Image (tube, rainbow, N blue to C red; front, side, top):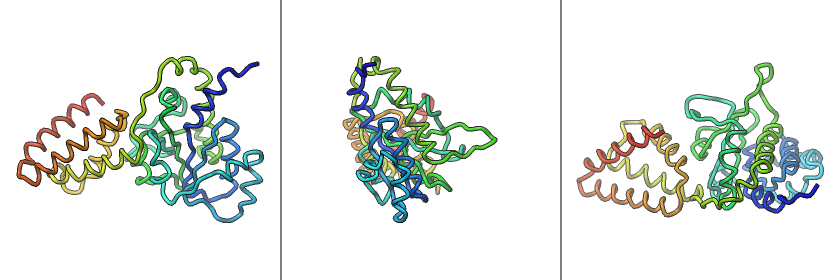
Length: 272
């Protein structure tokens, strides 16, 4: 059977990277590399990976040893995903900071059309505790793999395989549809994080936040703006608003700007 879709699939799969944060067991890194290559994903990024027992990782990688050789290492998740437009965090927990959680199939269906030119990171935390809130803040979306109550925990490479499979199979099923349109390029995480930092400073300046609750408010704002899939020009527009808010605070007109922003936020939440 001919693979007429292979070139296009490779281009799209090349825009997916797997990020492993502080993986405890080298064997899990090797098994992850093998699962990735099974599904055509070759961009492996490691945040503070284990430094010992590298032969164990190579043995379990089998024919995917090349992914271990080309894997890039980073000190933080923020550094690992800064060139990505879409960042999907994996979580086994619900509630609190983790309000909106997607299933693997739904998130693949949603974002397959956005691959190429946009780059996606799928981020996995340490085996024993997963991603912390600081990592969750960097994610545009969260995904949870449903499991039986008889055995709820998954091995790291199993979780990688489930998500990689959903994207691979989804690309096969929807390739013709995806090629019918060209996806716009969104702002990457480095650009978005710069905007969020600027916006938080501006909102503090106009005294928008109540005492001690800025982190929660910013999480809601992040969700709203991440869902909007902003392009670079739209980010520049928001940063212009931030500069105006900071100017207003410095010139004594911050109350008018605060009332205006409160109205904008209520309008956005009504559409959520």
